[in-house]
Length: 237
Image 1 (cartoon, rainbow, N blue to C red):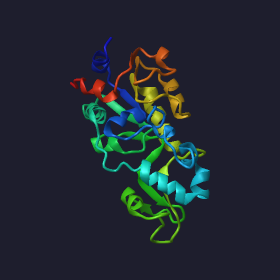
Image 2 (image 1 turned 135 degrees about the vertical axis):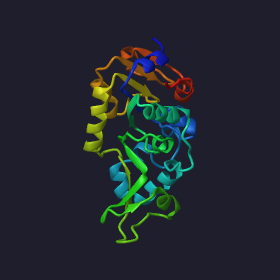
Image 3 (image 1 turned 45 degrees about the vertical axis):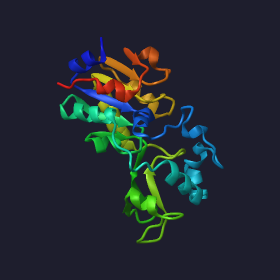
Image 4 (image 1 turned 90 degrees about the vertical axis):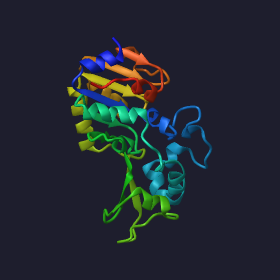
């Protein structure tokens, strides 16, 4: 059965996406040959993007964060747009994403579970005042709250931090109810998020990823192609 046929037969599709969904929008991933983990910094990206590093080397954190994590000019690509189209047509019930770029919402998706948070939300670590991503981008050194002077922290899940319970519960609810799960652009190596596919009990499980994953053997259909190129060819009825 083709992906088109699976989508045509399905009524509760869930799209589970990783970094590979956004690379076609010019946002680098982490683990590919040219990804962030293979670039040279004073500290490894895994260390920089950790809870401990944020509080102990805040200035260095924000130097890296502004340089590599704030792709505010990025536009939704064919994958984001097709997923939003499927939701608008009433066939897709939720997007579960490991990305923090907000591109699914920019494309028009409404039901989005951002497992790792979003760069578009930033809060004062003391008074919880909200700040947009542009405030972080345009600040110098350590961004501080205009109201109380405390450090502002991006609402992203750093290493050593737990995922938001409410977000996880919503994501798992949609996955367990889905009749088609499309997992795309993820190596399925980041836990606990990668483990959530175990909760799927529906009819068809599809994997779209440039490289092979450990879950390929479990899928009904595996496509080692770019996500946007695959989804752009889907007709939504």
